[in-house]
Amino acid sequence: MDQRHEQEFAEYFAARRDAVRRTAFLMCGDWHRADDLAQTAFIALHRRWRKIRDKGALDAYVRRTVVRSMIDESRRPWRRERYVEQMPESAHSDGSGGDRVADSVATRSTLVEALREVPPRQRAVLVLRFLEGLDVTATAEALKCSEGTVKSQTARGLAALRDVLGDALDDLRSPS
Image (tube, rainbow, N blue to C red; front, side, top):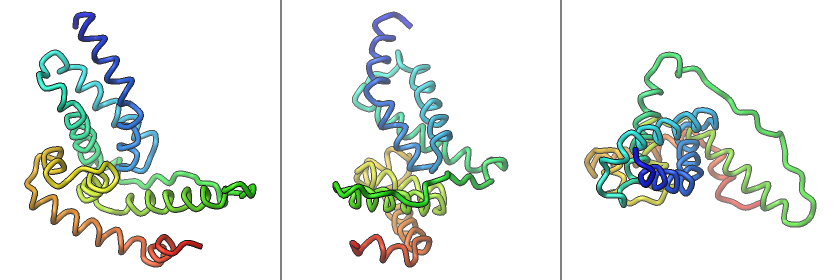
């Protein structure tokens, strides 16, 4: 790759690496796997960088690569083991709005834990639709499936998320 292409890629990577890593974490629920998924996506992008004509589609390409990698890895037998991230038992309030922060952290933690229980394809749709803010059409393009599939996977994913959350869903809805 010539220096101009390397510079363009480096700029894109620097601008998007944190967002891609967060998306990968929301998909898989593990920061180490998220790093691996993001790295896989950026390596694939780097290999094809010179051939990409529509630089406006880079985010979609990277997002699709992360989703596909996550789904592929979830099918491998050694990935069927459960990995539980250790979270602190409680957050302490210092009287300066820390209760809201603690509630926010608890809500996020509960949501991420629940997303781990949702099947990978449904989890990908939920993350792309509700956490990445993509509409049905953009989600379908990212996953290379029909809009109808996105809609049905969204409905099934939300139902699975409700089942997993159970009583915790009421706790998330009602502020303390």
